[in-house]
Amino acid sequence: MIWYNVDMKVKLTIVDSKCRCNYCKKGDIFIVDDLCPPLCHELWNQIYPYVFALKNGATLDYGNVKAKYFDAVCPDEARVKIHGEVINEE
Image (cartoon, rainbow, N blue to C red; front, side, top):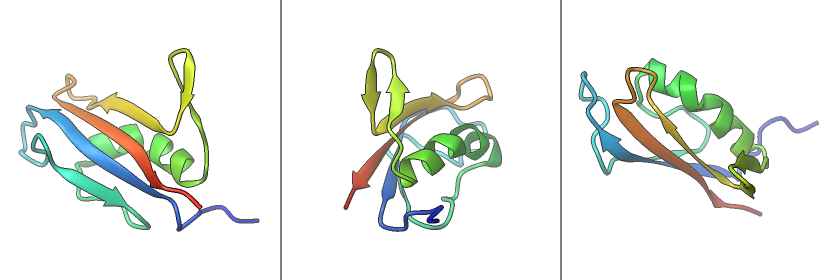
């Protein structure tokens, strides 16, 4: 059984940022291959389930459609907005 598809990559883009620790800046891009990106643990904990699902071939519910992407906000008063999307598939 394959639990982790290393061929799938997820691109994370910081759409907006008022990060109090300056970890994230608007326009920052991170590619998640097999290691977690340098994000604060609060934001990473918020988005990890989506990233894991996408890396393993899932399609997510996104309103009334199914999609290979997600949008999320930091749990710290939504100071950071992030967009994640699959950038390659077999």
